[in-house]
Length: 186
Image 1: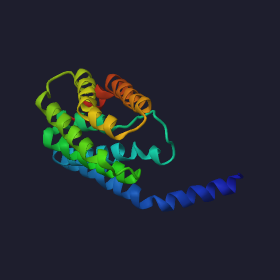
Image 2: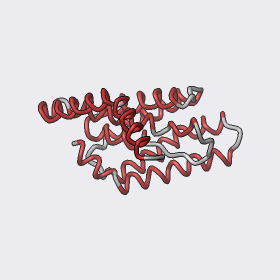
Image 3: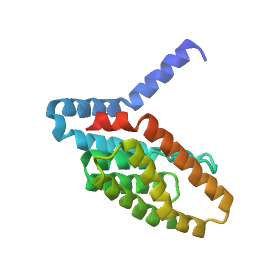
Image 4: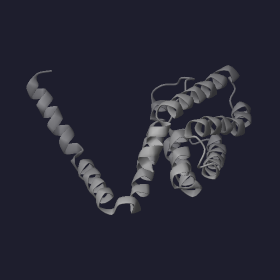
């Protein structure tokens, strides 16, 4: 690829995402101008989009390894802005994420229930250490959901790997970035 093609491709990308960039600038200016009154709304939208798109890889890779951002953002949202905000982020990101990855199935309803439960619990324990709370609630999510997952999935070993890798991924997230993200959004 020569420099002309690179510049042409960059111009094409810039034109394609120009409206998105303008919207992001307007949102950033609104946050700076209005401060705390709009910040929770902007954070919620960002959390929903990032959480939903974090499952998009399911469209391309069928692997028992599972990583996503839904639990992280739902729990942080609940701790920062209350249980209702956490439920909204969790439920919306589940529905959007599953729709994007073509996985709207019988597990969607149980996932919504389990995510809502951990959002409410996170809202109740807002003063707890976010790392401990996040890891505990990620485990609680799978304690609620596991009977249904194992009931509907045929390959039990693959399911155990799916759950185990997601718990490990969430533990790593809550240890390494959970406190910083919570501090940033508060």
